[in-house]
Image 1 (cartoon, rainbow, N blue to C red):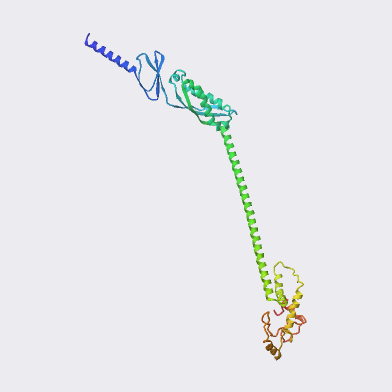
Image 2 (image 1 turned 135 degrees about the horizontal axis):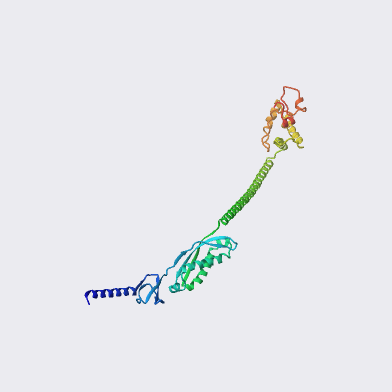
Length: 362
């Protein structure tokens, strides 16, 4: 055997050993699994790590990703119970739990999941109207997940979640829904505005009522206090009159002073003279007459006799009613009216009518 032949044999042996070692040693990555067949028949499932195979006899049929997968699907046309067309797209979250079943029980489990979701979704949404479909996403997701999980269990696949991303009605239905929503919002705004106006009117009426009540209470309290004050004043005046022992002349004079006040006011068109006026005037006239007649108590005199009388009366004790009136000459009351008296140089005498209504000279 030549040297060249020996080298070739060695090279062939080395290549064979290298090939055998390469085929017999297998490194499985983390979160993955490999299905091994021996002579075309399932042998075992390789876990992550360094694994050895029988050269030529064992082959790798499939490598399965054991992580959770997320697969989006395109929109599908679905008809609701009220015969409205909507477009729904969804996302499926699944995970392979048995690599052997996922390899041998189903040919393409991703496509199988898509078709299964599509048919199941048509069955679920077909039993709902549009409004319920739009507001029952969680219910639809739960029903889909339960249906898929029971169907994909024999395939070695577990469906974790199914999420509906979009539920889009056609354009006409969308416009009608927008109009409905707009009308509902306007109705609610009108109702809220009416409620606000109602509450404002109620509060305003309640405030007016409370204001009137407080005002009436204040007026009643003021009238009560005013009446009490007037009663106290009348009581004090009455007590002062009794303590001062006022005679009929003073009371008649006070009565005549109060008569003009009774006629005050713009609304007084007619004033009726009280019947007591004559008696009051007679009392005042009698007082003035006694003061003007000589020789009468309190009357005026022009001679020395009067002066002597005044001097004699100065020794008399003072009257308990106060100081005695002055003895200066006073005007007497004539018997004739003021307009008929003759012009004389003597002092003018006052009548009861002059005292009440005033004289022409004023």
